[in-house]
Every structure is written in C-alpha cells, then in structure tokens.
Length: 39
Image (cartoon, rainbow, N blue to C red):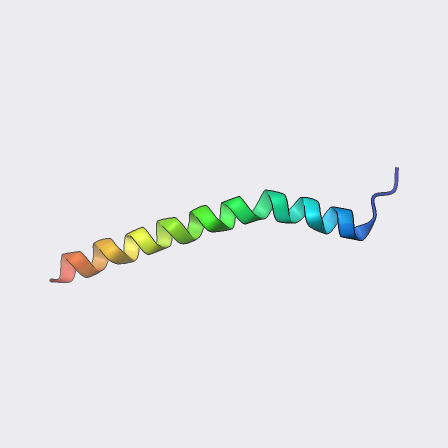
C-alpha cells in the first residue's frame, strides 16, 4: 500500500497539531505564572 505524500503530510498534521497546540498552551501558562511570580 503506497500512501501519497500529501495524505501522509495531512496525517502528520492531524497528529502533531493538537500536540503543538497543547505545548503552546502549557508554555503560555508557564510564562504567565513566571510573570505573576515576578510582581
């Protein structure tokens, strides 16, 4: 079974996008905590 590159890329997007989005949420939250901690 040969999966076209476009389909593979689309599959990767579906897998990685939520992970990246969660990562940004965590980073943003951590930065907020640090800023609040400094004040």
